[in-house]
Length: 108
Image 1: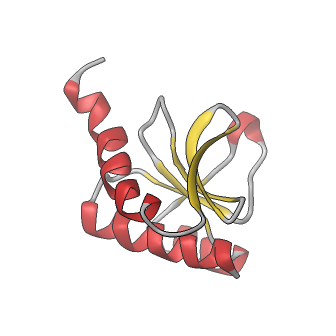
Image 2: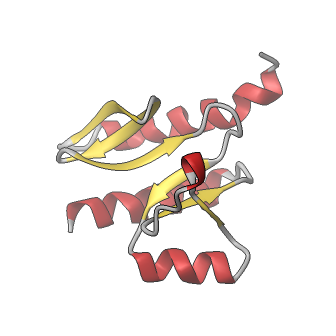
Image 3: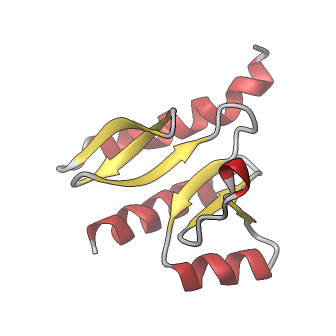
């Protein structure tokens, strides 16, 4: 794979490193994707093929982000997951904030 293709994955794990230092946050897999769990609950991963950040947020928040054009629906195999949103642009500040928001939601 090219360096460009690895950039989102590398960014994800760089940002995840900060979260993994927190109590209860672990590395795992979800539907074959390497992911993060908070106290056992999945809350974030990066898609291998697209490099999209995938985070779990309240369904209303996901709907708002999609309606505003800030996120894409997460629909593996054609089934949309209403509490999951995909983010295509690997922006360190945005991804960091989204990971923190997803981590908080996993704890609630």
